Length: 240
View (cartoon, rainbow, N blue to C red):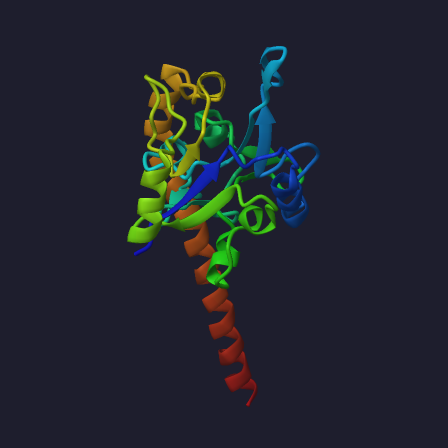
């Protein structure tokens, strides 16, 4: 089974925003929201020694995804290939996962009432294509691959790239950055999940109940469907 990851070479990024614009257009996300982004701290240093570092980003597809733990319905879950996805049918838009994400990589679409996030363009992967942001980048900033592929894993290792983590929060991201500056590392480091202790205990009690209710709702729909199907066939036989 593949273990997908992304390598981002900041030395190549010129801040053209092609990745963010393509993603926003491709997924028609609301207002200023996007599944990925390009950030900067502005000009750093003193004249004439000035520099500006652009930092593209998206969902980090964490090995330890706090969003999955906090989802009360199981809508947010991690696939065997490491990609964290959202089941729109099971999502109730509660926002628990949004608060839990250390990178602020999630948002709620108010029109649909569900959570949106980057999923490495899973539908494109199924079709044998790369994520949209990787495909459109004119500077080849982003590289996408399988960490179980020795060549890609070696490329990541040899680049010296590392994930953005902090001393207190390390959900083991699957996005690696080459050329990350100290200031950018501090500025974009993951924050502790925004969650009160009472909220954790509430979810421990509520999550199983919600999952049971969702399961019963699906079971009820299935029973109603088969009953109508059986009733229709029986009525047809009686009329015959």
